Image 1: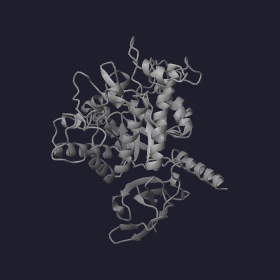
Image 2: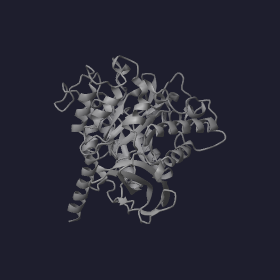
Image 3: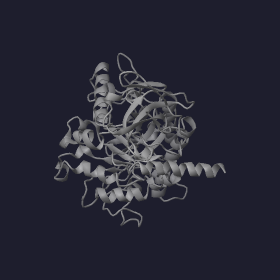
Image 4: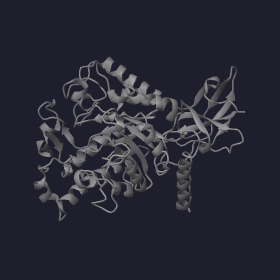
Length: 494
């Protein structure tokens, strides 16, 4: 009976998410994220020479920009190359923070703690982005500390294409990565653990990744390709198990290269002609991880335009929607490509991509690469998001397989001067209140309402009704939002 009830609740929650796409406004549930890359100072910090105060001010400026654009999640690269943006017992401070690997910021502060606090203060989620295997980004130029693992455990690493990589075939490497993630989950209030597309490195023509010795030792009768995939499978399963045991509410996601396999290689593959694929070149069997439930969300990097001859955005969008296996699918958009060719000089490219993905109830949002591009408002896309597509706020979609219990309704008290006081007295912790509008004579249903404001609070909040948008001839409702983004039943303002 318990299994039957849980299955019913799971189905109901999935239907709620699907219904949210059918409303006339923008979805109440939609992941709207931005990648902030630290490697080679792509996004933050913008320079290795910034002072602590400049680092803090720059991060706050980025957050405020993305909040104005309607984003609700930050995917922050905190482990770019076997080094980290926080004090760690396992790996040195990143060179991209202070200019010298192993050197802490002065005056001392914990950047990760600071970033999480500022992100949560704005009602946004913080997903910690780790590169699993890259160890030295540039062997000629990178700063490498004596405490870096390439120095203390050189036997763990392989050289390929001018970079050093953790050897994916070694059990010691997987164990180390597990320790790093366990430590992070234990000490920091992250909302997600996020891996990018760099599993085995992208193939270099005429150069074989130098792991033959390890394959002979650990291959156990598998082909080399199957053995490499099994190494990536093992690390994904390990992280999944650690996340579920340490902080079960944290989401685990991967942002792979946009092509799993081409149709010419596999009947299940996409109608594309990609030169490299996840399965055959990076040895990342994303579909297996989704099928097994080892990852909670996938963000394929669909950085090609609509109508691309080899990898059409629309073709890949449709393909990933067929193979998300009930887990969340967010689309990775390549806004960094603005102005690079005729398609990316078209101001409608990103808007059309958003319109397309919203036609699929099995797509739950977007992530943009990368933060830096938004600073220039390319092709007016900031304006498009603020004034149209992300004009109204959205909550990060809940994952019913993690938590599907709703918090208690807020109590509503009218005050003078068009003010309303919301009070939460439920047992389950909440992180915000949501304010919704509903047209007259419409069924009282979350999916038919429009979320117009999210107020960060855990117990009490005061709302100024005069500042709410688009309330004329509409009913106003309030909901409580729990830590996993489940909402309470709606309470009407009377």
